[in-house]
Length: 368
Image (cartoon, rainbow, N blue to C red):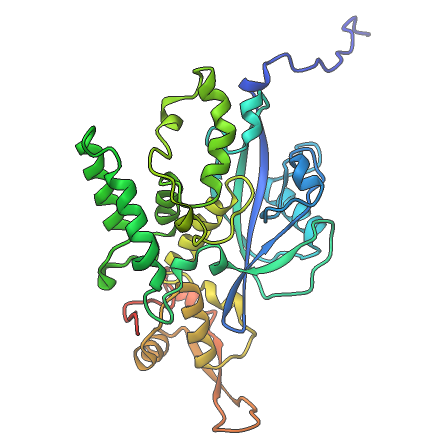
């Protein structure tokens, strides 16, 4: 028996570009080397979702990123792993989905009618390794993107000297015209960039970056504003976007707020940093960044690098041992001088013994 149905050929997508979306995969890959938390960035992308600048080795650091291809990638995670290997030569171990980033105009080509790019973000923790691949990849200090987040030597002077004054000027801008808005902004400033050391919340990394962006105090803000001005000229700029950056230009502050990144990549990185810091309290993520045997001093310094604050040495060690997270190996670290330090290992049994198995940070103290 034969069928008279004719084989169907694929039809071109007639839906307007402005009503379509492309799916991308973005990786935040973190290592800690010599007490410096590092993130993997690329300077060159050659796939279809790359901008012309990125295809020509652009000036803006970018997170490893590539399009999801349903015909080649069985899962989103598989696609991410393939892109990271292709761009950096780095095979990934454990990865975790972070968030889906799909705000309007996060890829500024949308202004010109191109499809919106929705990116699924992932976090991977690893030990630093040599790089290869097509992306001109490099390891960078993540505090070079967020210099206000590193409190290991005390409160960064730039907060009181540059950021808070600039944010207060932004909050007070047009206060006579809209006092309620000025009051809301003032509250946000003092909630996210608390002038009181004791109430600084080290997990609110994303909120702080977004506030600086809205106030026009990071380099991505004037870059994006210049492109979106096209829409403002013809009256098609959405109200939720038009309300951004309504404040005074402050170039001195803008120059002090870290290295900018491509598109909204610094926002993605801020979300990842906040997630990692939060997980320190309830998941043993730090052990993915350590060798199988380590000293308690090495572990403490690693936790301090990620959290951005110093810890009380004795309380931290007491917490680790009492919580059953580590156990002694019976071996000592070989040093050229000084007293040998005992080596420990992570007790993987803790993952079966209790659900929340982080190092915990109840004894954090910000030291001078």
